[in-house]
Image 1 (tube, rainbow, N blue to C red):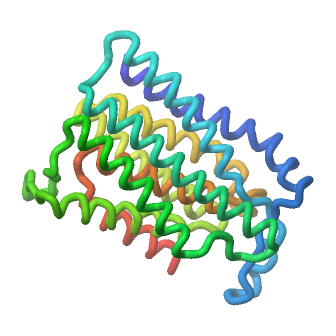
Image 2: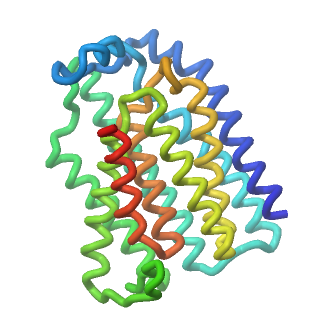
Image 3: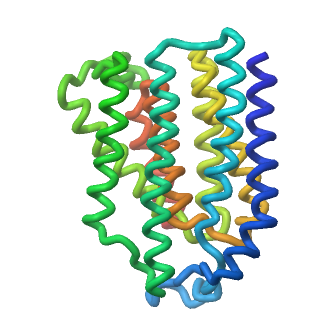
Length: 274
């Protein structure tokens, strides 16, 4: 049953995301929601000027719908997990959506003002930490501990410093994913692999709800690649990249391995530099 739901989450997310492109890409063109390219950078990149952005809305909807359908079916048919895992999945998904909303505001302002800058860095950081604070508080109230699993070492209790490090890790990771956007298919393909790895880890730990959420992200990336692969017909914008950053963090904390965010963040940065 679990593997069937897993595959179903991928298929539903991929189909919904892919089909939404047939409506959203022309719509974004029509309302002139095109990407503004920085003056600095390679000249060939300026050819992307005017390519529709905010395409992240497509996979936010696709992954969310797929996750809700499959996880709800799991929990309603006796597959409910602990209250803590329930909160980690739901709060993690809401955290990702929250980051997506911040990205939407950033994209909308930059497009309306015809510039690459939307929200200021201070405004974004304040909103980011508010979202992270709400996520960490909800997990703590559900019985979450300050322990974290370090590969090859074991479980380590960080005490109060756990929350400080967690907040810094999440905000840093979200911005690392954000930096990877802008090159056709790069952020999409990297996140697809990352989500796939986390889905396997979650499945091995028997955290089925979390594994299904990761599978929904995988499917959504597959559907979005149809539109985002070179030559990109649409960019995800900060709407999508900040959402993905939040989703990756939710998965890492969901399997109690936030330390992996350091390695994952490095992978994202190396990809954009290469």
